Length: 617
Ligand code: M6R
Image (tube, rainbow, N blue to C red; front, side, top):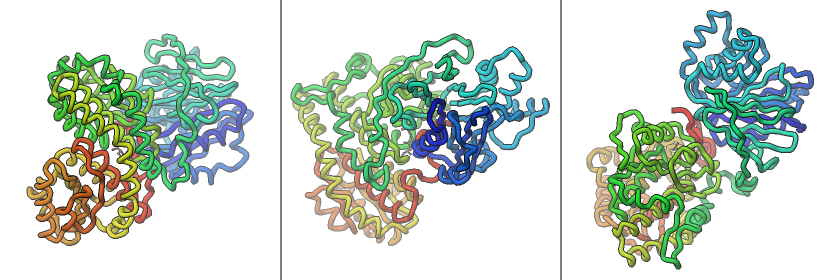
């Protein structure tokens, strides 16, 4: 969702900002814009509906040379994607330029007041209201400095924002602020970078600070960084940290798409998630986050998992894992529903919040609610130092590395890996698992990265063949049972997201309660059917589908004969304990979605309308 990049220093700001915007493309957007301060302090603005390439086409002239500038990729909230609604927005007097990620919820009432005072508006956006509110404070309270004008304006609005502001009378300076949306500042020698995440400046500096919730900073080459709280104006000490991110991690490394690269990275990302935690020789699992709170987890009457999208699917598998191995009751909720339905939560509950980005607005709000009600909140995030990682009471990182493709792949399997570790650790600790069971399970989990490698090698080609056959169908059903019911949901979501084919996931047994009506010779059905759990029942489901001429694509184990003999296509994954089979099953479903999308000519890494981190509700 919206990306912000800013630069002030000695380099060509246009190049830094444009390249930075390209790095943020993965977040999802529909328009782009830039403002460059020229040597006289004048702002030159270019903005357009479309992609950064379209912006390049309209901003090549020498007007855009200078050492300070900022840019923005917009994901439309208020108003359609259009040139006028694109950022930066400029105040009526032309002096202040502002880019914004988030939503100003009370913009309508402020706009009415500003119109009464003579302000005019060119766009439908909430952002243009904010930039004019800053001008209003500057004109009506002569003693306020630049940063105070922005602070006063922010104290009048509510909603979520990360903003970056430039002023023609304050050359080489930025005022930045955040509430609910992330903002990072890169600190180089005689230069500063502003960005929604560190990827736009990773090759320039390793020193960064992440602006905290409710903070505003004044950044200038002359005076450095000065941070204050937005509401109280209290000074805050900048907390500079060293970036762990590297340039290679955020480049495609020879793959056609980030999504394909990330699918192939899964043996490593799962291995990295297990590393130092799963210690088979020592017969233990060591996870700092859980280790420190084992007693609290053991006494929990209930665990509630909250998440959205793919992370919610991981949560559903987490429910099966924790109930199976640790025998603690688990409920899984969409964060967006949980936060608005007055849930019953007590201080005996543990809430596990799962989020790849660590910035999802609904999940953030649900965490805040759970904390207010006294629950202990444990976070599972992929992005280090993300907002969710910071507001939770404890947690574990998934160590999948940066995930750039909008469709989540390696982060999902890393989430399953962490949830497996948590379930096994709790099961061992509370005695639900015997030592022998625990050892058998951790030995199997330890072998998963190797098995994932086998799946990658053995299923890619067959998935390409299947994709060719089904790329132009309009509907898909995905079915699975037990641990693989959520796998079916995730497979369907992957296909929908990137190929725009309508797909539904169901527990296989639910088929006869409705979806069976859809089955005919035009309906492909992906069925996840490892020889574990309720395999016999799945065999019956396949028979029911074939009796209605449905086309079956089955994910099976090598020793399977019954499903394979009826399926139109079979994809083999190695035999593994049912609890870990969703990790292996995820891979051919990712391949299938990827190759179908590719054949349909869809933008695999940046699917239409989707954002990588959904920072608005
Ligand atoms: O960053 P999060 O895990 O909190 O994101 C949640 C969902 O927005 C995300 O999983 C979404 O469904 C992805 N596009 C899935 O591929």
